[in-house]
View 1 (tube, helix red, strand yellow):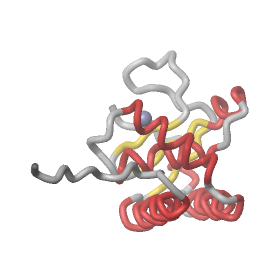
View 2 (cartoon, rainbow, N blue to C red):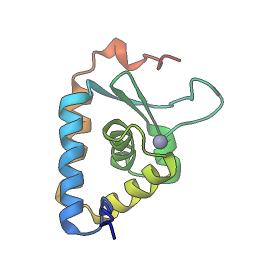
View 3 (tube, rainbow, N blue to C red):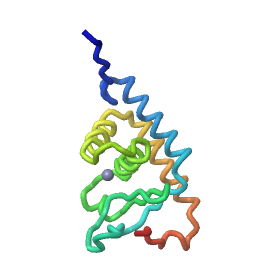
View 4 (cartoon, protein in one colour):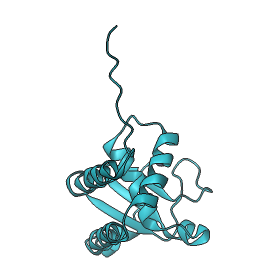
Length: 136
Ligand SMILES: [Zn+2]
């Protein structure tokens, strides 16, 4: 009988959590040009819709108001968008599950580290770019 090769799920154990966190940090450093934190982030296709996050042209947009309203940490959406960038063919449902699971498993120090990245990237955005609207 042929052996069936089964890939272990991404977050099956502590090692998996560490590996994914590392991978996403690498994605952030190498592939993401900027993180834009906007007060209100509107869906380019449905302007009345308030978004948590958006990934366009290697830039991540985070909507502050939506996070405040639902008491969701910005880092969670940053993780979500990084998963999209690192695994472009992963279906949305699995991205959501992975994001939640990783956030739950991630050590506080790791979360703080990611939060720092938001601030570092934010600091680099020229003032006139903050009003930038994501392209359609
Ligand atoms: Zn998504």
